[in-house]
Length: 97
Image 1: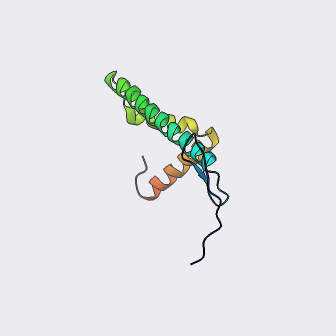
Image 2: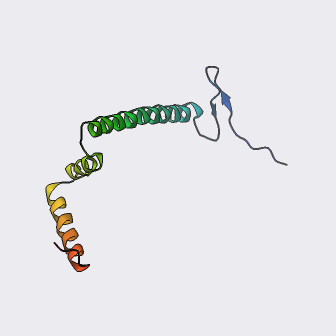
Image 3: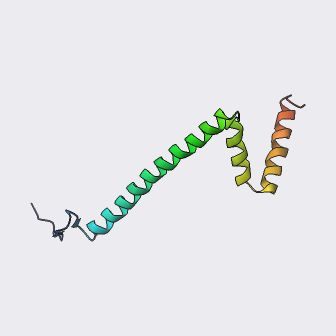
């Protein structure tokens, strides 16, 4: 059985290893950054839920608020185009007003 000629370089500070041209320290750094961002994203999502809860307690409809936020992210021309298609499709299936 032939031995693979792979460089293994242990670091004293952590257990990351350079293997086959892959920098263990750099890879670990990226992974840790993503993990921190995922934690922040979860905290922000919880904050957003809290705001929707407050709005609901004040009598606002969170579903409609989400729709408005979605519409505000879309430029005016794109919103008009979507509205025209929506009206056309609704008319085609007998849902015209």
